[in-house]
Picture 1 (spheres, rainbow, N blue to C red):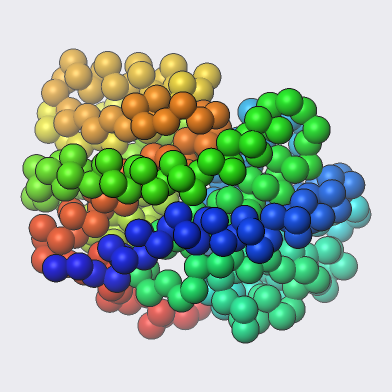
Picture 2: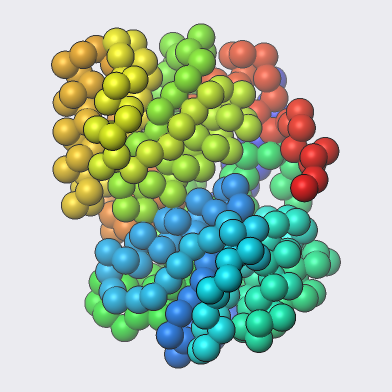
Length: 334
Protein backbone atom coordinates (compact mmCIF):
# COMPACT_ATOMS: atom_id res chain seq x y z
CA UNK A 1 0.00 0.00 0.00
CA UNK A 2 1.28 3.49 -0.85
CA UNK A 3 0.47 6.38 1.48
CA UNK A 4 0.65 10.11 0.75
CA UNK A 5 4.13 10.20 2.24
CA UNK A 6 5.41 7.82 -0.45
CA UNK A 7 4.34 10.08 -3.29
CA UNK A 8 5.55 13.21 -1.52
CA UNK A 9 8.97 11.70 -0.87
CA UNK A 10 9.37 11.04 -4.57
CA UNK A 11 8.42 14.67 -5.29
CA UNK A 12 11.38 15.99 -3.27
CA UNK A 13 13.88 16.35 -6.16
CA UNK A 14 11.40 18.29 -8.30
CA UNK A 15 10.40 20.47 -5.35
CA UNK A 16 14.06 21.31 -4.71
CA UNK A 17 14.69 22.07 -8.38
CA UNK A 18 11.64 24.30 -8.64
CA UNK A 19 12.46 26.16 -5.44
CA UNK A 20 15.99 26.88 -6.64
CA UNK A 21 14.66 28.00 -10.01
CA UNK A 22 11.98 30.32 -8.64
CA UNK A 23 13.59 31.66 -5.47
CA UNK A 24 17.40 31.55 -5.80
CA UNK A 25 17.88 35.18 -6.83
CA UNK A 26 15.35 36.25 -4.20
CA UNK A 27 17.24 34.27 -1.54
CA UNK A 28 20.48 36.00 -2.56
CA UNK A 29 18.80 39.37 -2.09
CA UNK A 30 17.60 38.37 1.37
CA UNK A 31 21.09 37.12 2.28
CA UNK A 32 22.59 40.48 1.26
CA UNK A 33 20.09 42.28 3.45
CA UNK A 34 20.55 40.01 6.48
CA UNK A 35 24.32 40.24 6.19
CA UNK A 36 23.95 43.83 7.43
CA UNK A 37 22.17 42.83 10.65
CA UNK A 38 24.07 42.45 13.91
CA UNK A 39 21.76 39.62 14.98
CA UNK A 40 19.51 37.15 13.21
CA UNK A 41 16.73 35.19 14.90
CA UNK A 42 15.50 31.90 13.42
CA UNK A 43 12.04 30.85 14.56
CA UNK A 44 10.09 27.64 13.93
CA UNK A 45 8.22 24.72 15.48
CA UNK A 46 8.45 20.96 14.92
CA UNK A 47 10.20 20.10 11.64
CA UNK A 48 10.64 23.80 10.98
CA UNK A 49 12.48 24.22 14.27
CA UNK A 50 14.78 21.37 13.26
CA UNK A 51 15.75 23.21 10.06
CA UNK A 52 16.63 26.25 12.16
CA UNK A 53 18.86 24.14 14.42
CA UNK A 54 20.68 22.62 11.44
CA UNK A 55 21.21 25.93 9.65
CA UNK A 56 22.47 27.65 12.80
CA UNK A 57 24.87 24.85 13.75
CA UNK A 58 26.19 24.60 10.18
CA UNK A 59 26.86 28.35 10.19
CA UNK A 60 28.50 28.19 13.62
CA UNK A 61 31.00 25.67 12.23
CA UNK A 62 31.85 27.97 9.32
CA UNK A 63 31.93 31.68 10.20
CA UNK A 64 31.45 34.17 13.00
CA UNK A 65 27.81 35.13 13.37
CA UNK A 66 25.17 36.07 15.89
CA UNK A 67 22.30 33.70 15.14
CA UNK A 68 19.80 32.54 17.74
CA UNK A 69 17.08 29.90 17.44
CA UNK A 70 13.71 30.06 19.18
CA UNK A 71 10.45 28.18 19.11
CA UNK A 72 7.47 30.39 18.31
CA UNK A 73 6.21 30.97 21.83
CA UNK A 74 9.73 31.18 23.29
CA UNK A 75 10.31 34.13 21.01
CA UNK A 76 6.89 35.60 21.78
CA UNK A 77 7.42 35.59 25.56
CA UNK A 78 11.12 36.51 25.57
CA UNK A 79 11.74 39.81 27.36
CA UNK A 80 15.15 40.57 25.89
CA UNK A 81 14.70 40.36 22.13
CA UNK A 82 17.17 42.80 20.59
CA UNK A 83 15.39 45.05 18.11
CA UNK A 84 18.46 47.11 17.23
CA UNK A 85 19.69 46.18 13.75
CA UNK A 86 18.26 42.65 13.90
CA UNK A 87 16.18 40.52 11.58
CA UNK A 88 13.94 37.50 12.00
CA UNK A 89 13.47 34.51 9.69
CA UNK A 90 10.33 32.52 10.47
CA UNK A 91 9.72 29.01 9.12
CA UNK A 92 6.40 27.19 8.79
CA UNK A 93 5.21 24.77 6.13
CA UNK A 94 1.59 25.87 6.50
CA UNK A 95 2.23 29.53 7.24
CA UNK A 96 -0.48 29.25 9.89
CA UNK A 97 1.40 27.65 12.80
CA UNK A 98 -0.11 29.51 15.74
CA UNK A 99 3.12 29.72 17.75
CA UNK A 100 5.18 31.01 14.82
CA UNK A 101 2.48 33.41 13.67
CA UNK A 102 2.41 34.91 17.19
CA UNK A 103 6.20 35.33 17.00
CA UNK A 104 5.88 37.06 13.63
CA UNK A 105 3.38 39.55 15.01
CA UNK A 106 5.55 40.17 18.08
CA UNK A 107 8.59 40.80 15.86
CA UNK A 108 6.63 43.32 13.80
CA UNK A 109 5.44 45.08 16.96
CA UNK A 110 9.08 45.48 17.98
CA UNK A 111 10.01 46.87 14.56
CA UNK A 112 12.13 43.91 13.47
CA UNK A 113 12.43 43.09 9.78
CA UNK A 114 10.76 39.75 9.07
CA UNK A 115 11.05 37.10 6.36
CA UNK A 116 8.79 34.05 6.32
CA UNK A 117 9.61 30.77 4.57
CA UNK A 118 6.44 28.82 3.86
CA UNK A 119 4.78 26.50 1.37
CA UNK A 120 1.36 28.17 1.29
CA UNK A 121 1.00 31.26 -0.90
CA UNK A 122 -2.24 32.45 0.71
CA UNK A 123 -1.12 31.90 4.31
CA UNK A 124 -1.11 34.54 7.04
CA UNK A 125 2.67 34.45 7.38
CA UNK A 126 3.13 34.95 3.66
CA UNK A 127 0.90 38.02 3.76
CA UNK A 128 1.99 39.58 7.06
CA UNK A 129 5.80 39.34 6.95
CA UNK A 130 7.90 42.09 5.37
CA UNK A 131 9.21 39.61 2.81
CA UNK A 132 8.45 35.95 2.12
CA UNK A 133 9.90 32.95 0.34
CA UNK A 134 7.53 30.41 -1.18
CA UNK A 135 8.83 26.85 -1.37
CA UNK A 136 7.67 25.17 -4.57
CA UNK A 137 6.21 21.92 -3.26
CA UNK A 138 2.49 22.20 -3.96
CA UNK A 139 0.33 20.88 -1.10
CA UNK A 140 1.86 18.43 1.35
CA UNK A 141 -0.57 16.11 3.16
CA UNK A 142 1.67 13.78 5.18
CA UNK A 143 2.35 15.17 8.65
CA UNK A 144 6.04 14.27 8.63
CA UNK A 145 7.18 17.00 6.29
CA UNK A 146 9.39 15.58 3.54
CA UNK A 147 9.48 17.88 0.52
CA UNK A 148 8.60 20.93 2.65
CA UNK A 149 11.35 20.08 5.16
CA UNK A 150 13.90 19.67 2.40
CA UNK A 151 13.04 22.89 0.56
CA UNK A 152 12.77 24.92 3.75
CA UNK A 153 16.23 23.73 4.81
CA UNK A 154 17.51 24.62 1.34
CA UNK A 155 16.18 28.17 1.68
CA UNK A 156 17.73 28.65 5.10
CA UNK A 157 21.12 27.42 3.90
CA UNK A 158 20.95 29.72 0.85
CA UNK A 159 20.26 32.72 3.08
CA UNK A 160 22.61 31.90 5.96
CA UNK A 161 25.61 30.87 3.87
CA UNK A 162 24.87 33.70 1.45
CA UNK A 163 25.60 36.03 4.37
CA UNK A 164 29.25 34.92 4.40
CA UNK A 165 31.96 35.45 1.76
CA UNK A 166 34.32 32.65 2.77
CA UNK A 167 35.40 29.86 0.45
CA UNK A 168 33.78 27.28 2.74
CA UNK A 169 30.42 29.02 2.48
CA UNK A 170 30.76 29.23 -1.29
CA UNK A 171 31.58 25.52 -1.41
CA UNK A 172 28.40 24.80 0.54
CA UNK A 173 26.33 26.93 -1.83
CA UNK A 174 27.90 25.23 -4.86
CA UNK A 175 27.08 21.79 -3.48
CA UNK A 176 23.53 22.87 -2.69
CA UNK A 177 22.98 23.01 -6.45
CA UNK A 178 23.69 19.26 -6.58
CA UNK A 179 21.18 18.34 -3.87
CA UNK A 180 18.17 17.68 -6.17
CA UNK A 181 20.09 15.06 -8.18
CA UNK A 182 21.66 13.52 -5.08
CA UNK A 183 18.25 13.19 -3.43
CA UNK A 184 16.82 11.62 -6.57
CA UNK A 185 19.59 8.99 -6.57
CA UNK A 186 19.25 8.31 -2.84
CA UNK A 187 15.50 7.75 -3.09
CA UNK A 188 16.22 4.90 -5.50
CA UNK A 189 19.28 3.50 -3.75
CA UNK A 190 18.22 3.47 -0.09
CA UNK A 191 14.63 2.18 -0.09
CA UNK A 192 15.21 -1.57 0.03
CA UNK A 193 17.85 -1.58 2.77
CA UNK A 194 15.72 0.60 5.03
CA UNK A 195 12.61 -1.41 4.31
CA UNK A 196 14.43 -4.48 5.63
CA UNK A 197 15.76 -2.48 8.58
CA UNK A 198 12.25 -1.29 9.45
CA UNK A 199 10.89 -4.84 9.39
CA UNK A 200 13.65 -5.88 11.80
CA UNK A 201 12.81 -3.05 14.22
CA UNK A 202 9.02 -2.94 13.89
CA UNK A 203 8.44 -4.33 17.40
CA UNK A 204 10.70 -1.84 19.17
CA UNK A 205 8.89 0.94 21.01
CA UNK A 206 11.61 3.46 21.90
CA UNK A 207 14.49 4.92 19.90
CA UNK A 208 17.21 7.37 20.94
CA UNK A 209 18.51 9.67 18.19
CA UNK A 210 21.96 11.26 18.36
CA UNK A 211 23.93 13.65 16.18
CA UNK A 212 26.32 16.57 16.43
CA UNK A 213 26.55 19.89 14.59
CA UNK A 214 23.88 20.21 11.87
CA UNK A 215 22.91 16.59 12.43
CA UNK A 216 21.46 17.45 15.84
CA UNK A 217 18.69 19.30 14.00
CA UNK A 218 18.04 16.16 11.97
CA UNK A 219 18.12 14.02 15.13
CA UNK A 220 15.51 16.38 16.58
CA UNK A 221 13.29 15.99 13.52
CA UNK A 222 13.84 12.23 13.48
CA UNK A 223 12.70 11.85 17.07
CA UNK A 224 10.01 14.49 17.33
CA UNK A 225 8.23 14.43 13.98
CA UNK A 226 9.34 11.19 12.33
CA UNK A 227 9.38 8.52 15.03
CA UNK A 228 6.71 10.05 17.28
CA UNK A 229 4.34 11.66 14.76
CA UNK A 230 4.94 9.37 11.81
CA UNK A 231 5.69 5.92 13.21
CA UNK A 232 4.01 6.47 16.61
CA UNK A 233 7.12 5.28 18.45
CA UNK A 234 8.61 6.85 21.55
CA UNK A 235 11.84 8.70 20.75
CA UNK A 236 14.29 11.19 22.23
CA UNK A 237 16.87 13.43 20.48
CA UNK A 238 20.26 14.26 22.00
CA UNK A 239 23.46 15.98 21.03
CA UNK A 240 26.09 13.25 20.76
CA UNK A 241 28.18 14.91 23.44
CA UNK A 242 25.29 14.54 25.89
CA UNK A 243 25.27 10.74 25.67
CA UNK A 244 27.20 10.38 28.91
CA UNK A 245 24.85 12.77 30.73
CA UNK A 246 21.75 10.64 31.19
CA UNK A 247 21.37 8.26 28.27
CA UNK A 248 24.45 6.33 29.33
CA UNK A 249 22.35 5.03 32.24
CA UNK A 250 19.47 3.98 29.98
CA UNK A 251 21.45 2.58 27.06
CA UNK A 252 21.02 -1.09 27.88
CA UNK A 253 21.27 -4.31 25.92
CA UNK A 254 18.97 -4.35 22.85
CA UNK A 255 17.91 -0.68 23.22
CA UNK A 256 17.93 0.93 19.71
CA UNK A 257 20.26 3.91 19.30
CA UNK A 258 20.24 5.82 16.01
CA UNK A 259 23.51 7.64 15.29
CA UNK A 260 24.06 10.29 12.60
CA UNK A 261 27.73 10.72 11.70
CA UNK A 262 29.21 13.22 9.23
CA UNK A 263 32.77 13.45 10.53
CA UNK A 264 32.17 16.72 12.38
CA UNK A 265 34.46 17.57 15.33
CA UNK A 266 31.55 16.64 17.63
CA UNK A 267 31.34 13.22 16.00
CA UNK A 268 34.30 12.19 18.11
CA UNK A 269 31.63 11.75 20.78
CA UNK A 270 29.27 10.08 18.32
CA UNK A 271 31.87 7.38 17.68
CA UNK A 272 32.72 7.02 21.38
CA UNK A 273 29.01 6.51 22.08
CA UNK A 274 28.77 3.91 19.32
CA UNK A 275 31.72 2.05 20.82
CA UNK A 276 30.18 2.14 24.29
CA UNK A 277 26.92 0.78 22.91
CA UNK A 278 28.74 -2.05 21.18
CA UNK A 279 30.34 -3.07 24.48
CA UNK A 280 27.02 -3.38 26.31
CA UNK A 281 24.97 -4.75 23.43
CA UNK A 282 22.75 -1.85 22.34
CA UNK A 283 21.20 -2.10 18.88
CA UNK A 284 23.16 0.57 17.05
CA UNK A 285 21.69 1.94 13.82
CA UNK A 286 24.37 4.11 12.22
CA UNK A 287 23.86 6.46 9.27
CA UNK A 288 27.16 7.86 7.96
CA UNK A 289 27.31 10.76 5.52
CA UNK A 290 30.31 9.24 3.73
CA UNK A 291 28.32 6.09 2.92
CA UNK A 292 25.87 8.10 0.83
CA UNK A 293 27.58 11.16 -0.63
CA UNK A 294 30.84 13.08 -1.04
CA UNK A 295 29.13 16.46 -0.81
CA UNK A 296 30.30 19.00 1.77
CA UNK A 297 29.64 17.35 5.17
CA UNK A 298 27.70 20.43 6.31
CA UNK A 299 24.95 19.23 3.94
CA UNK A 300 24.57 15.97 5.85
CA UNK A 301 20.94 16.64 6.93
CA UNK A 302 19.87 16.83 3.27
CA UNK A 303 21.51 13.47 2.58
CA UNK A 304 20.81 11.39 5.67
CA UNK A 305 17.15 12.36 5.88
CA UNK A 306 16.39 10.33 2.73
CA UNK A 307 17.27 6.85 4.08
CA UNK A 308 15.68 7.88 7.39
CA UNK A 309 12.44 8.72 5.57
CA UNK A 310 12.33 5.24 4.10
CA UNK A 311 13.04 3.69 7.50
CA UNK A 312 10.22 5.62 9.16
CA UNK A 313 7.83 5.05 6.26
CA UNK A 314 8.16 1.28 6.44
CA UNK A 315 8.35 1.23 10.24
CA UNK A 316 4.88 2.79 10.30
CA UNK A 317 3.67 0.49 7.52
CA UNK A 318 4.76 -2.69 9.31
CA UNK A 319 2.87 -1.52 12.39
CA UNK A 320 -0.31 -0.89 10.40
CA UNK A 321 -0.03 2.89 10.57
CA UNK A 322 -0.26 5.56 7.88
CA UNK A 323 2.95 7.59 8.36
CA UNK A 324 1.20 10.74 7.20
CA UNK A 325 -1.92 10.60 9.37
CA UNK A 326 -2.47 12.26 12.74
CA UNK A 327 -4.50 11.53 15.85
CA UNK A 328 -4.36 14.83 17.72
CA UNK A 329 -2.29 17.32 15.71
CA UNK A 330 -4.53 20.02 14.32
CA UNK A 331 -7.21 19.35 16.92
CA UNK A 332 -5.43 20.87 19.90
CA UNK A 333 -4.73 24.60 19.89
CA UNK A 334 -3.12 26.49 22.77
